[in-house]
Length: 103
Image 1 (cartoon, rainbow, N blue to C red):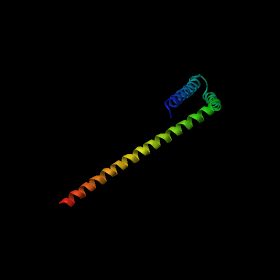
Image 2: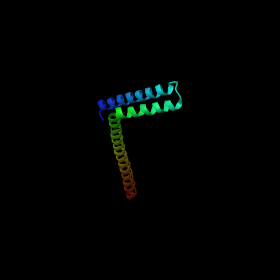
Image 3: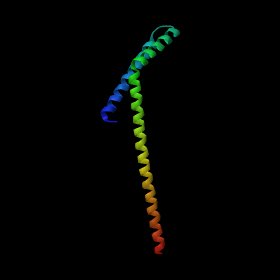
Image 4: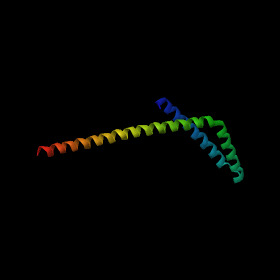
């Protein structure tokens, strides 16, 4: 993910969090009975889901892509490090073998 995509993704997540937080705070702080508050909260959630569904799907896809990229980089680094350790152990074993043969 490029810096521009990463920054756009973070901005979109910030807006999403702000909208959700505002809706929840507005509904929960309103002086109404619990059943009415729950109904309004459900309606607000359904409206939000309907209105922002494409953005949510896109954010989810971007997050999954970022996770897969990061996982691949970590696996690659682990493999390189593991190969490095094996090479060091092999070199040490050969060195020890050479020292024993010289005795």
